[in-house]
Length: 233
Image 1 (cartoon, one colour):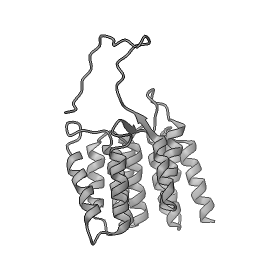
Image 2 (cartoon, rainbow, N blue to C red; image 1 turned 60 degrees about the vertical axis):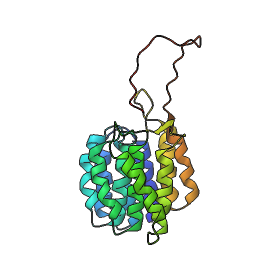
Image 3 (spheres, rainbow, N blue to C red; image 1 turned 60 degrees about the horizontal axis):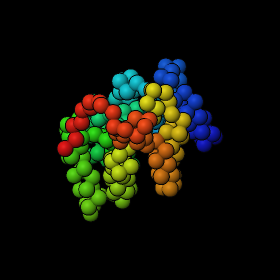
Image 4 (cartoon, helix red, strand yellow; image 1 turned 90 degrees about the vertical axis):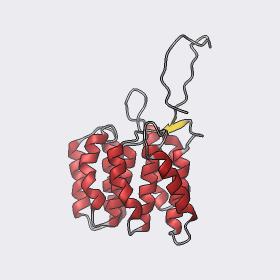
């Protein structure tokens, strides 16, 4: 039953999220290569992003080849895996891998590429990630294109929301400030990905958003003497 296999893949991905387990990654890659069902292939590829969410560099090495896979569902999964592992990092290597997918022949892959890039560029400025402004213009263009697939337009609208999540005062991240996997974020992201089947699931991404504002007060609500660097305009 492919639905049970898909569920098993999701459970495996969540159980080992952030652990970087090479054995689990091997099992997921085996499913990508051998399972005949497209949903199973897609979730197995995405699962690599969850397992390696604490190690974007390793995720890049595993997934980079899959971004050019002949199967569109694997390409979509690869884009989302990179988006999850490199969320809010502005990782230029990941961006370079995903950008060509914006012109993919499959509409759902183009949508996945937009969502992934938005996750990666979330909370980035032109100083930290020079691609941000150009990507914003690209999203507006996608929404207004008459000949573009409605699925891609929908993805572009969601991507704009991800870029500005929390009124630009939050960032999507899979881990707590101490580097430990955050259960709420993992659950929220997994539910968000099920927007593939039901659009309302997209709202769960809010669980993966963490405030990024700087509160300069001590326990007595006094402003302490401290220095910080800010590259915002």
